Amino acid sequence: MDKPIQIVITGASGFVAKNLRKYLSEKNVHLISISRKNFKSFKNETKVISKNYDEKSLLPKIKNSDALIHLIGIGKQSTKTDYESINFQLTQKIVNLSKNAKIKKLVYTSGLGVSSNTSIGYFISKFKAETSVIDSQINYTIFRPSYIVGKDDLFTKYLKKSIKKNKIIIPGSGKYSIQPISIDDVTKLIFQSIVNKKFNNKITDLVGSEKISFEKYVQLFLQKRKTKLCYIDIEKAYHLAISNPKFDYGVDDLNILVGNFIGDHKKLKNLSKTNFQSVKELLKTGALF
Image (cartoon, rainbow, N blue to C red; front, side):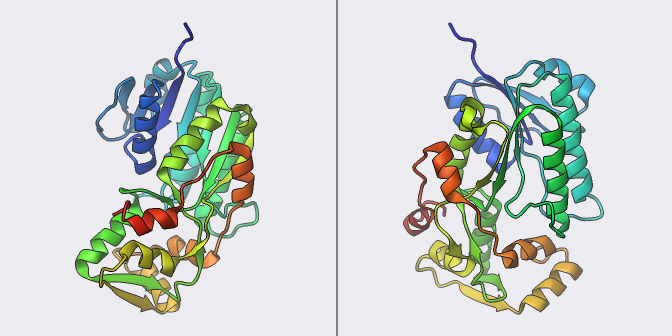
């Protein structure tokens, strides 16, 4: 009888991780899931609470695992949490832990738009993290995701909250494009990246098949709900993002939107041979609400 696959997941309480853990649990994968805060576990799962991802305590628990999926990251920084320490330094720590634990495969979620010539702080931290993963000499797959959407993703939560207030803020024209991908497709692709050798040592955009304007996405989400769309001048939006930590969008949220980043879906489809869900159809059916 074959030994079951053992996979380590960091950031286990996050949106992507929760959906991924459920999917892998149903596949009878043995999970070692690590988070700073408590979370509800699934079958075939060992729960580990670790405040600082201390190597001494984690090493014996994860040694010789088939893969580690690193899902920790922040998209908005403050004086208490910054990109350098979370997106880069913690990733470097996880890479070193993986090497010492003789992990066979590393999967890392970066960001769509990351490149060596970026000037955006968020992307710089992600690029440095990618470099750390590549330099580890461990077999890797790096995904660069666009908006990953499902019932509990951060943007969906924001829209639901805004509907209750009867006001959704649209920075600028709202005409810039996004390329959302469903969480169900993401969970399948991450698992595939571990079991399918075609994904070995590759950086791949994690994007859906449809490009859609931010404005149109919001309209489709609303369906026929009469929620007010409040368009705000982009200069004013940046000013509020810089000066008001409670503003709906951070500076890099705006950078990513205005940047109009589009990924290579064709490459992902050819690599995975997956039939992707239509996010537009999901929105139209109200499945994300």
